[in-house]
Length: 277
Ligand code: HPA
Image (tube, rainbow, N blue to C red):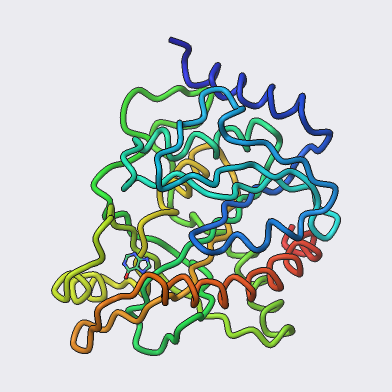
């Protein structure tokens, strides 16, 4: 059994052999938010199954591929389909692609997700840029022996989401006329949606939205020194005292609207990336 560093390097080597792109920005596209991938130019598509050590897909995560190319001239590598903890993957498996992105040369990670809105000011299909997070998943991708070649034993998380990127994003959203909230994301393990009592607790903790992903990837990104920009799309309204049953079809339709907004916003942010140093 190879160590993590060797597995990451093997996966990166196969990707390098398949694409001439040296990506600078990594993008993880959340549920229903894959639209941006179609805007990638000069693209190379690599199925996850062709990449050594990538987790094997479960039934739920069938459409898994890596897309390398350019958006607004910036070389990117995008994950169309992510690995979720609720599918049964370990935290290490969920975050393996982030380590591979880092090995490919990425210095900035953009993560997106569909989330439940608990802040009463939020509306369906709102874009929320993630300012901070709370890990309520009950696990951590850094648990276990630490390899100092990958990052420190006790990584600092005082600012896991880059402040300059947040400011640039909000400016771009304003210019494009896209409503853009800023708030705290709390991650739960899932796969069930929350009870009323849980939404009340999570809101009371200080979270604005809740979802089942993103935090593991953001923790590993911080561990290996990537700047992170995170987005949630509010796909359902989760006010504990006025909660309605969720309809997954409705969530996906709302995600599509939010995804269209991200597909306009992210290219603009990439176009102006140099302004965020
Ligand atoms: N809870 C958790 N995850 C979610 C939700 C939610 O209400 N909506 C979309 N993803």
